[in-house]
Length: 264
Image (cartoon, rainbow, N blue to C red):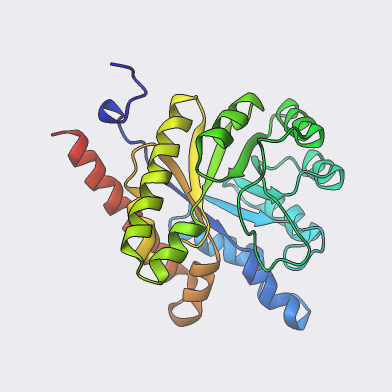
């Protein structure tokens, strides 16, 4: 039996990456320096986050260049820089050298990332960006839809990681569409197995909450979940340490259940 099959896969420790973009959104709504995204990152790490994600958008609507500089300089934990595959963003990444870059689609008019990156159609700029980042020692993640064509294209682009888009699954869960949720979880699980078999590290994210993260966390191929907006929103009611700690505990419990099943 292949070592990459799910039945004999020993689930790795499941990392939690916390996206602190929307701390910066609140700061920018009024101006000034409060609340501070760096302080939020430090609190998240103290509560169990394994790394910090920040999305530097073209329009700088939340995270700024100075935020990236401070996060990279002052955090001991990994920094994952979300960015579009543009010459401007590539130059910033090569200057700041985050631990990883997650390449995402970006439209100025969108409120948040609306879907996976189109990696199937030929894109010389995307290919060049992946190569330049990898040559600088930066791990490259591609935020993609959970389907076979996107995974195959990501492997051909020589990405290190794929982050599977969980937004559709979370939207269906929100409206209690049980059949749709089951379909999307199968789709994500199948994609995770294909990506793992292709030698890609598997992450997932977008829209995950306490109610939806467990099912994805239980997938043995998953190495990291990236969660942001929900945790920052919950922090309004109970604090960031509480929201991150609760998510960390939920993920650990889900992964422990996977380990028990694998050991039967």
